[in-house]
Length: 614
Image (cartoon, rainbow, N blue to C red):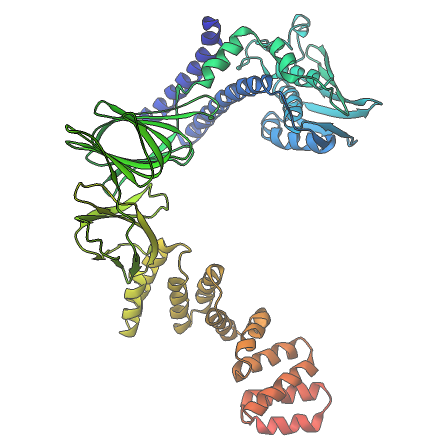
């Protein structure tokens, strides 16, 4: 049993990975022409894709065997085939194979995911074992009880001896093929479990024709009972060992701000201070359903914010297990455990939220953590909070990520008013702890703020007419501010408008309006378009501003001009009457009214307004 798993799984994967590793080494050590390098990289990518396919094929087969209840729904078989066609098109394109689906639809009641997998495997093989410039023809035929699906290819065909065994586990169409030979076994298992049948006819060097009978309503069967009969003992053995967390889980390591953070697959964050000494095992099972965090803290401190993993942190000769927890453990001479949410179990003790556990040579002692600090806020880059008389010091942690997985900086202070001196314009998250006389941290207090250091410098430089320096500071601001604030973008747009660079100003003001909509932003956009004499592009924006500024003569003029250009002379006349009531001497308004009156065949009035406009 062990030999079978080793030869069919470990051997196959190890060979593929060894080949990939060798290829990467060649790329690193030897020079190649751009064309040779391109071909070599493509071969490596193909090898990686094949390795992934082997894993997916095996996992999907096992997964199906142990599902008892499936979700059924009405499925358009033609649409399902179109989905499969789209997914296999990259392979078909590479092989030069055309796929034809005769349009004939039927609605069946089945499980879409597994039916799709069953059909996909056959279509994939029909392309994989096809000839260059070959074809795959798919046809649907209705029957009284279901539907017949024919998948016919122009490929290499299947040897007669193989025809009797291709649906068996570990059998393959082609001896040279990579993989386990599970795809067709899976297809047969799925189709027969639904109460259908699958058959194949094939001629070598001519092609193969797979015919599937799929009932319109699936047979009422126990999937597990049927499937287990199809699975050899080695698969069950493999399933069992795959359930346990023996594989290394994926994680990201970030070293910054005096911490080493591990961001795990499900979003949990494990954070050590930079001076810590520790051992770490991060495992999972094959299906990513079971995760384990196993750490040994030798010296320093560690904080864990767990999402779902089971975590064990060993320190000294004690082990602490989380129970859905955000907690910290510190080890110097003594061991201190502080729980911020959930519970921690260790040393035959349950440590609840807002509790700490002190382990010293005198024994174990529980303490109550200080409350979270109040009044935490950041104004003009200065952090302030209400002082706690029981605190001997404060720890400030600043991050650019809400989960504090990427620490920007951290430090201790004795003051409750601190200048932060942030370098980048960005959003920041702040967490502050107060430490009591036993050096237990308080419950965390958090806040966030937007830092605009470079933007503020730019405003000062503008007042001193140093526009190029101001522009430089604004560019530094938007390089890091992202969409956290519209102010730097607006200021750049305003500066470009002052310099008559209207198109650049429009570009930035549109960015501003994606972040936030304000009347002054809309007005700047309108001013730019007016400067470019592109009035018709801003009719909506002018109407919007006029709701707040109904007597703005300039805007009324451009509103009337747009209406006049569209041939809406009576509407333009109405706007201009209002404009000239507000300012009878507005020359441009009188001249525009003259044009409108002329269009309305009111020639005497046209002459009158023309004179007024001189």
